[in-house]
Image (cartoon, rainbow, N blue to C red; front, side):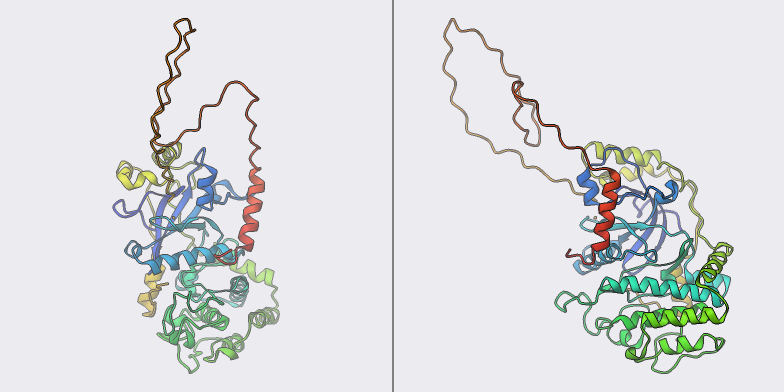
Length: 466
C-alpha cells in the first residue's frame, strides 16, 4: 500500500473514503477504501451505485473495508476502455463464489467509472512464494483445489478469466481468492460485440498458453486450465514454466519432485484439447493428498497456518478499522447528500484541498505487478460511475390570464393568496385543506429483505444484458 497523492488521488469515490493506493495496471488503479456511513442516502442513489449492504453476521469494522477500482485517467476518453471496464464490473457481479470477491457497489456510467468489491486481507501468491518460499504438498493441493473452485464458478457463468497468474491470487483468511477480471470475456460473445479482435495478444505471457499468445479472442476454457497449471508450477518453483513466452516444447522440470509431475505434465501442453478438465484436475489433487495421508481439510489448515505465520499480510493504514470515517470527509459527503447531490459531488470543485492536511499515516508495500515485470520480464499490459443528479427543466411560461372582474362594493374582502416561492424545479399544486387525508405511503421493505433480494439478483446476473 502507498499513501494517497493529494494531487492525483481523490479522497472520496461514491460513498467510499479512499485510504491508500493498492496498485495500478494497464487498465485501472485500485485503492483501499471504507464505506462512509451516510444518513438519508436516497434509495435511488443507493440503487444507482448498486450498493449492497454488508451481511448482518459480518464484522462491522472489516465489512466496511473495500477495494475501489477506477479506470486509468488517460483512458477516460477511450470508448473501448470504458466498455471493457464496464465488462469487468459485469464479470465481478456475475460470479458468486467464496473464491471471487463480491461486488459491493459500482457506477460504470460516471465521468470517472469505478466499482468497489470485498477487501481480502492477505498476501498475493507471487509475494508469498518470493518472500516465504515454495509450497509443500498440503498447501500446494489446497491452493489448486481453491483455484479449481474459482474457475468452475467463473466458467459456470459463461465467462473466461484469461489472466490467472500468481499476482492475481490473494491468500486470504478464508483461503485463496482470484482477482482481476480486466480480461474476462463471455465465452459466447458474438464477434460483432467483442472488444478483443482476432490476433490480439492480451494477458501475461509466462502464464498464458500458446493459443492465447497467438489469438486471445478465440481461446476457450482450456486456456484458463493452462494458467492454473502455470500458477501451480510457480508455487513449486518460484518461476513460471517459461521465462518469457509459452513454447510448444515441454517446460524444464528442474527442481520439481516427481510427485507433482503427472498433473503438471498433463496441463502444461501446447494442444488445448489434450489438457484435463477441471473435474480431472480436482481428482488428481485429491489423489495427491490421499497419497500424502492428508485430507482437504488438513491441507486447507496447513495453507491457512502458512499464510498466518508468514508476516506478509499487508498492514492497514492507521485508523482504517475505526468505526467512523474522517470527520471532514464524512461532513462534506453528508452535506452533498443533504443537498440532494451525490456523495462524490464536492470533490470536483476544489473540496479536496480542504482535506489536504487530514488523514492518517500509511504503510508502504511493494507493487507486485511491478516486481513481476522486473523479475520475469514478461508482464504484458492488459488493455483489457459518481451519480449525476437529474436536471429538471423549469416549467414553460403560461399565457397571462385575463384580469378578474371587479368585485361589488358590498362584497366581503377575500384574503390574498400567499405567493408561491420561486424554485428551480416545478412544484406540485398546493393541497387543499379540506377532503380526506393523503394516503400513508407503504413502509419501506426491511433491510434484511433488500439484502436477500440483492443476493438473488447477483446470483442470477450472469450477463450485463439481464
